Length: 361
Image (cartoon, rainbow, N blue to C red; front, top):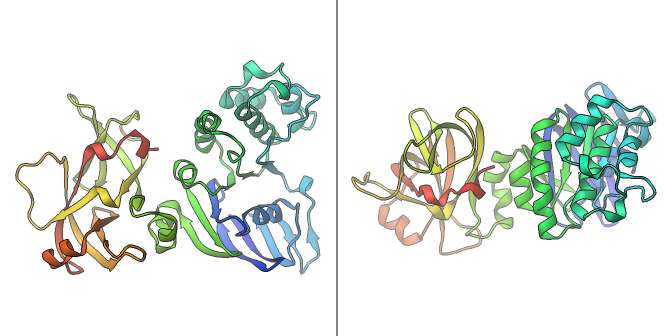
């Protein structure tokens, strides 16, 4: 567990953090520009010192202002990947990577990292000849070869154009599945966070306003200001049950004996996939339709009803379906006509074609 309890005055903003974070997986640090995201990880890394506080990873105390402990960055066993790769221009790619090994190469680890990031063909080249995405892959490799206990990534895609971002994203997804250390990933991109993160921390003016599993934070009211009505959605982790033998569809398990059919997923049965279901793609009915083109007609219980905070023409319905909670947007007219009440039993209709590969990670 990563225990963070510190304060730091940043001009007019006071960064005030009290968190317990997982010891593995990608932890997204999200918020507006100026919310304190980079200062947050700079304090964790030791590049900046809190006014007061305590930082520990397991039993390893990195900082304790009351005991006079403040380990310098090089003694914290933390890898740091910046927005710009910051490679040594006079070293080849291999030289930059070996720098992460502190001059003590581990051939097996070196081979694993090079293979993970697909940079074997770049080893003899110099940074000036690399694309932005290639430079970032080398920077990530250098950080991993230092064998850190923790990896910090400060907007690693922010300086890249769209093609380079698309080039690097699959490697970040592979990284997310491969490493067994915590990765603090600063980003203002919700698309990146949805594809990569397991856990999410939301900062606002230096304060932590959201913290928890990505699926929980995404479903909370904290995210409403960040998402247009069209982007309002629920994020679920579901298991692949089977692939349809005749049609390009995959069945996921949303609850006991509750299949959710989606466009074909390139994952074997038993794998877990992340599904994003937009609130505008869910309709509700009191009577189960007998004949319909919609493949997913699922029993649901109304858990909550509220007007949308920012859109007067939308009523937000929270639906319990199996072991999951989904959000549906309907019109006030529909809500009144259906006379919806908390506890009502309904059927939720979700088009299988609305859940395409881009909504599944």
